[in-house]
Amino acid sequence: MIIWLASYPRSGNTFLRMLLHHSCGFKTYSTYNDPLFDQLGATDAVGQERLSAPLEELAKAPETYLVKTHDLPTDKSPAIYVVRDGRDSLVSLARYLLSFERKPSMMKTIKEMLGIDNFSTVLEELIIKKEHYGGWNDHVLTWLHRD
Image (cartoon, rainbow, N blue to C red):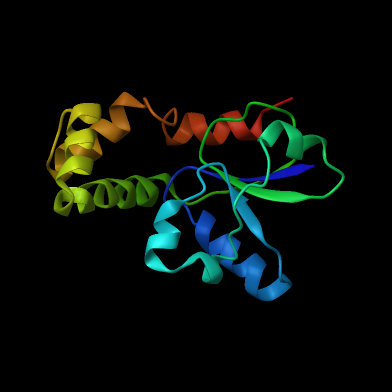
């Protein structure tokens, strides 16, 4: 069984996972397997485990898997949805995307994806385009109003 730990990016999902790990001893998983956590040595702090099987198999398993996602829902599995003020999430996401300027290949990907490279423009495009995660408002509503 999967329980989604869902949120729009930069809304506190990792913080929730740390709380669940340190207060309750729960291990969590991610649809992305977050290689950045391994690189930063943060895997233990977050309590992250690598997915041991495809999500379809884990959904049918008798054990419970707490799985982080920023994607829109694709099934009816239960979810804990983390909400942060959309203005704060979008500002944080814009800063996060621009932090990859030190990694030319990542910054090139961001420029190609959004066609931009400065904070004001990145933030404006995140607000207007709503491409990758459906925009903050649509993301929240899609998770809250699933049947």
